[in-house]
Structures are given as structure tokens and as C-alpha cells.
Length: 534
Image (cartoon, rainbow, N blue to C red; front, side, top):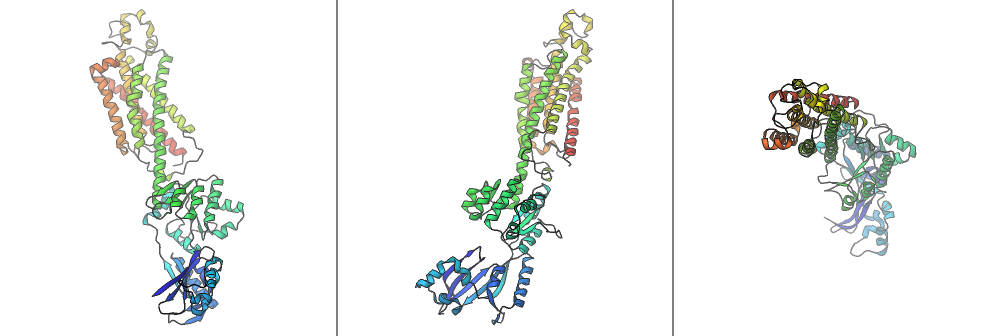
């Protein structure tokens, strides 16, 4: 066995580390070195062959070893070069003893700037290839990012061939695709002018790979992206990643392999260190935003409909279509459960096939506002239309309905089916307005429930994403309907609300005015998909 005497720690400048040790029973030390092949090979002056013999390091050997290294990197394998320096070649360190160090030896080992010279004149002994396969789900996650318009920029300390091979393996770069202008080492990229760097990084929507990068390179890349108006999310696990994590729009630290410094600097910590979890979080975030819009859309549309109904009935001079108690019932009881249930909508099937929304995109776009007004107007017109239809079916035309205030001057025969003309506009037993208001209120409630069912998706058709995709929504619609039926058919409640039980013909009227709302919603969803280019 060997006894460790000293460790020459890794540094990014020389890209290697080494251990000074002595074999038990031996007098002189040996230095065992491992590091990046492109850094260790130039410091080797000899090669140890498989038979144990040592030959000088010639240019032919360097080319052969470099070719072997590049071939291993393309597999892709992370490669380490191994070398040794033995005996008297170590100079003062050949006899170094950690238990009895001499001052000259201590000074030599404490000066990190001299480590590269100590690790020179080495004998190359081998190449090690380490396979660090990506998780199986990463390739799928990368594909979903591309569909969602999210660029994946890979920043790694690996060599350029290894980084490019890994990028192809996990789907960042398709096989056979040219990497011109999309793969750089840190030194190559930052040797370019600032304008050229900005252009390469932001003038396209393609993924990129940066290899052999330094920690400060990550910060610079994040800075360029943020200056260009992008929203970069940076992942990292080490202490050196903390500044870039803080600078990014969203810093993501690893929960298992990450340091506490990285976790403190990050906005989000991955409990499973899995890239696919980030993609799942993006999907969930988009679903939450869509559900928030569905909630707002539903409530605004319903309120516009109620306002439109009251305004239109007043404008036409009609009797009071909906009383204050009716409006209060609709707003507090029948609107609440469906609106709450919309917060549980699952993500749309096409949720991750849409580009990200802009940072300055309004919550309510012009087209969305048009949808609110159009749907709300229909709700109001249909509510008043159902009210008028009930009277027309009783032989009272719109012209008479608009002059209902003069009913005391009408003849008994002008309004068939009522003892007096004004009974047609009263809300008491046997009077006409109770049935008309009940039909109007029921039509409004049914339209709001249908509107809630349509709001299970802002763009997707009900044929593609049916209402039962959200079981809470079905419950949220069923409860208000049952409550409304109790108000209609339980006499004490009906008397309080001044409503009347509906006959079969009345239900046909409700269906005739409320069901077209579904067709209108489907047409507006089709228009939304068309405008979005889906």
C-alpha cells in the first residue's frame, strides 16, 4: 500500500490535481496526477507502455493519444489523463515526509502557483473514460422544451467534443445538424466582440452548448440574455454557481447534490435534482396562469351578461326581468362554486406546444376583451329574450310588453288568460310575471353553468378537452343546479324569490336560448386557435 504525504488540490488554471505518496517500505515518494487530457498531456515527457517499459513522449505518441482521447469524448465519455512522477525526478519532494517536513519542502507545497511546475516532466500511464449517462426522462423533457418554445443552453466544464456528444445524445442537437455558431468553448465565445456575442446568443431561437467554461462565464451569459429581454433560468449546484443563480431571472439549485450556498442563492430548489422536474414546473405554471384567466373570464362574462340583461330590459321599457334578490342569488350562490372549481382545471393538451407569453403581455388581450363582451352580451340578450318569449307565447307581443305601465287602460280581451290586463305583469299566484322571470333566471343560470363547462379550456374544443377532465367542475356545476331546482320547486323558497315551477314548454324555452352559448364559445375558441397559429 501507499501512505499519502500531501495533496496538490485541483485548480482551474492547470485542470489537474495530484497526490504525493510513498509506498510502504520505500525511501522515495511518487506523485500521482489526474486531470484534463489537454492539460496533462503537454506536461508529459514519457509514456509507460503495457509491458512496464517507459519510452520518450514523441509527437507521434501525442497525436495517437490525442486521437484516442477525442474518440472517447465522442462516445461520450468524460476523460481523465493519468500520469506519474517518481523518485528523484521530484527533486526536494522526493524525500518529503508529512511528519517531519523540511522548511524548503513546506514552502514548495504551500505555493499553489508552483503546482504546475511540480506536475511537469510526467510519465503518461493511461486514459480513463467515465460514462455519466443522463436520466432516461431528460431526452423527452428536452423535446418538450423545444415544443414549448424554451431554449436549452448547456453550460459545462467538459471538453467540446464530450459536450457536443452529450448534447446530441439527449436531444439538444439533432443528429447530423450543423453546430456552426451554436457550440463554443468559454474561451472561444468570450474572445468575440460584445456585439457578436449578443448576436450569437439572442438572434435565433436555437439551443446552444458552451464547454470548458469558468464560473464567471455563466454570469456573463445570464447578463447578455437579460439585457436582450430574455427570461433565463439558471441551474447550478456549486458555490461558484451562486452569483449566476442570483443574477438569473429564476435560479434553480439542486436539492441533493447542491451546496447550501447555491440553495440560499436560488429561487427554487429541486428536491430530486431532475431536469424533467423543471419542465413539469413550467407546465404547472402555465396551467395555473390559464386557470387564473379562466376564473376571471367566467366571472367577467357572467357579470357583463347580468348588466346587459338589466340594461336592455330598462332600455326596452320592459317589466323588471330580474329582481335584486335574483341577481344576489346568481352572484353569491350559482357563480361561486363553478368559479372556484375552475382553479382545478388540468393543463390543456396543447399547453406545452405554445410559445412562452411575453413579459409585457396583458392578462386581458384585445381579443379576450372582445370575447368577454360578445359572450356577455349574448347572455344578457338571451336572458331578456327568454323573458319576452314567455309573454309572446301567451299572446302578448313586444310592443305591448314595452308599454306594460299602461295596462290599466287596456281591455280585458287584450291580454288573454288573465282576469285583468295588469295580472300579466304581477308576481302573485296566478299572475304572469312570476313564470317569465323564472324562465329568464333559469336561462341565465343555465348559461352560466354552460359557460363554466366551456371554460375548462380557454382555447381547446370541448371535443378535445371535455368538461369531465375537471371532476371538481362537474361538482361545482351540479351543486348550483340542485340549489336552483330547490328554489323553483320548494314552495316556501319559491314564494320568497317570487318564482314559479316550470312546465315542460318552459324548459324547452330555457334550452332554446341557453344552448347556443356553447356553439358561440366553440366558434370563439376556434378563432383563438387560428389567431395563435395552432
